[in-house]
Structures are given as structure tokens and as C-alpha cells.
Amino acid sequence: MMTKKNSLLIVDDDAANLMELTHIFRAEYKVYVVKDGKAALEKATESLPDLILLDVIMPDMNGFDVLRELKKSEKTKDIPVIFITGMNDNENEGEGLSIGAVDYIRKPFNTTVVKIRVRNQIEIVKLKRGNLASNN
Image 1 (tube, rainbow, N blue to C red):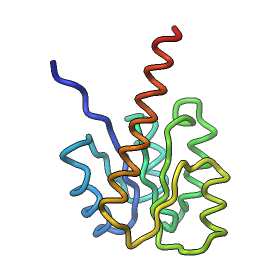
Image 2 (cartoon, rainbow, N blue to C red):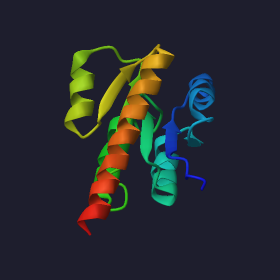
Image 3 (cartoon, rainbow, N blue to C red):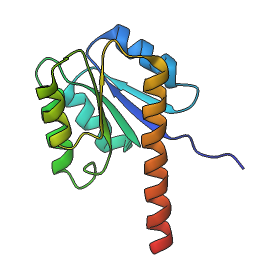
């Protein structure tokens, strides 16, 4: 029996970051990639990924605004979001976590740490789904 791959939506306006993150995760996950906040909202609603890796600093719509919009939608409000950002101050990290991010990773990131943090969030998603299925 083939098991379905979990899915990630990676949102970053920097092509090099998108390529690096896609390379890290494509063997293990179904990966969707977009370059801006508006596209992120559309793709998240359409594909309902298991986890979103979201850059904070993007033109037009920053990551904080994207997360706020995701949380307003019944379809996307429960998708966990990990911020990946070059912003290195605790105030921004606190804001991201306070509006609903599950984690905050600073660039340049350590590949091993990013993989573990993503795997941990995917495991939480699987556990929640298992509990929901057993409660129905």
C-alpha cells in the first residue's frame, strides 16, 4: 500500500531560498512553491497543505498579514505555519508566534534543524488527524 506524501507550501520571494527549501524537502514531501502573499493564500486554499513555510519580508503582503488572513478562513485556519526569516529580533519572533505561527526559524538556517522542525510539525498534524478520526 502506498502512503500519501504529506504536503508543504513554501512561500518566499527569494528564488535561492525557494530552490534550497524545495531541494531539502521534495524527496519526502509534496512541495508547492509560491513567491508572494496573495499567491500563498490562493495556493493554501486550493491545495490545503499540511504545513506552510512562510517568509516574513515580502513585497505587497508580508508574512504576518498572510498568516492573519489564513487564520480568518475556515478552510486554512488550522494549517500550521513556520516562519522562515532573516529578521533577527525577538520582537518580530514574538509577533509571529502571538498571531499563530507554530515555529520561527531564522536565516541563514541549518538544514538539519529545519528538517527536524518540519518533521515534528508534520507528526503533530498526523497525531491530530488520528485523534479526530478516532473521535468520530
